[in-house]
Image (cartoon, rainbow, N blue to C red):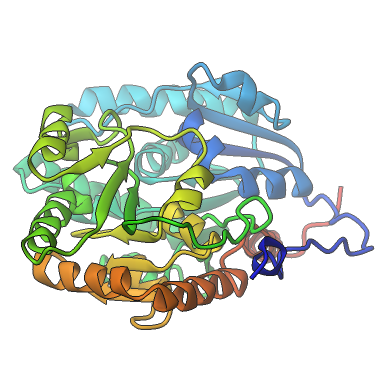
Length: 403
């Protein structure tokens, strides 16, 4: 099979339609940091620029601020710190954010991820906006700690979010149907004003289907945050079982230990896996496509998860079979035996069996990899996400006249 055969279905079409009419003057986007915008929210930025005269991104800036501004948005620096048990600090941060919203006078305030949502909800009590979008790419708040103050913070935050969603001018965005169910179980009811995006979307032309690599020993690769919640210690135990069976397979980890927060696994532990279990850790990767040109299998043994992992979608676009655990997000995309294999979380034996099955059967890897790419093309591309976002804004703004 040629490389061109593997890339079938990736050609873009250019419909000859007029640009979508701009429906509002200004959208203000609140998001934790500029790096997250650049890695996950480019389709959103493209849609916002299509529907609004002006897009302002309020975020914690880094050395990538100019890269964000190059997308055509105006950037306002704001440090969205971690949730605090100090009410006065929370109030001061909300007041500062309210002043920014007052200065901007936005038609729509679009809040992405829990910290901006909670702080933005407080600020919007002081400076209301005509329309509000509550965008949850993850649901970390719904399991927010066990300490007393954390429980109080969660309760207060959920009430703030619920009050926003009760307004007819609000709209909820989540990534999977599992996420929507959890939101509703937590008492947050958007009514009919919601959309399920299916993740952040991947451009299948940027991530073409890759032909199977030619490896003497199959490689299973993990790409993501090096954290306990991603179950990497379970993966190491599974590798130990495979070695005990004399099953040849290599495990490669790609990701940083710097951005995992309290869940991060220390670099010393990850390095020790290389010595004790023969796990190769490469740290952050500049171009993840290089990983999927090299690796045979995608593996994500997550203990828990919300939202749709971007790394999973990138591997699917590259036509790699997917080994995941039965947790929200992963199970939303991967059908056991079709796009890959789904195993129970925390089960090193089941994970070892799944990896062995794929490692022994190259034809199965090809078949499941092709199915994974097809599934991506059927509703998880950047184009799909843009259409969902555009329809959501059209619905929310309703009868607003083009400007």
